[in-house]
Length: 202
Ligand code: SF4
Ligand code: SF4
Image 1: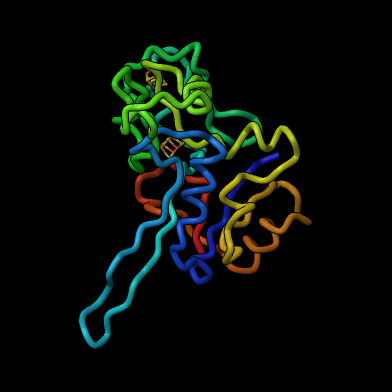
Image 2: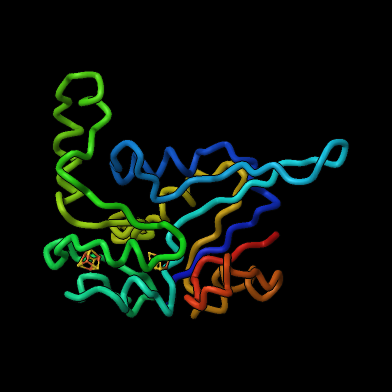
C-alpha cells in the first residue's frame, strides 16, 4: 500500500471546492488551509493566461519534517502517508521550518475560530476545534478519518473537474497507477529532494 495523489492541472478551474470541502471535513480554523488552489497570472497581454495550482501536503517519501522532529511525533507510515501524533508533539515548529511547501500549521491559544471572530461561541465549532490540539502542529492527513470509513479524501470526492485522483500506487489496477503510467506526472519542486507523493499533470 502506497497512497499517492495525481492532480491533473488541465482539469482544474480553481473553483476552490477542494478548499471548502477540506475545511468542512477537517474543521480547520481561519487562516489554515490544508489544501488550497492558487490562481497565478502568466504571460503578458495579449498572450496572458491564468494558471491554477492546487497545493496540499505532499506526504513526501524523504520528508524533512519527519527528519527534524525531535520527538518522532511526525512519522512516515507504511501506507505512504506522513502523519503527526498530537500527543507526542511539543509544538517546537521545527517541522514547519523544514517543510519547503508551507504545508504545516501551528495551533496556538490565539488561533481564532470563525464564530469567535464575530464574538459568538458556536458549540459545533468549539467541539471540532478539539481536533486541532493547542500548541501542536498539524496538516493534511490525506483525510485519514474518511479513509478509515473507506471514503476518498474530501478534496478528491468533491472536485467538480475530477482533477484529483487518489489511490494506491502499489496496485497496478488502481486509477492512480494507470494515470501515472499513462501521463508520467511530475512532483512540485522536485529539486527540494523530498520525493513527494503528490504528482501533477501540466
Ligand atoms: Fe512534510 Fe511538507 Fe512534505 Fe508534507 S509537504 S510531508 S509537511 S515536507
Ligand atoms: Fe515534531 Fe511537533 Fe516539533 Fe513538529 S512541532 S517537529 S511535529 S515535535
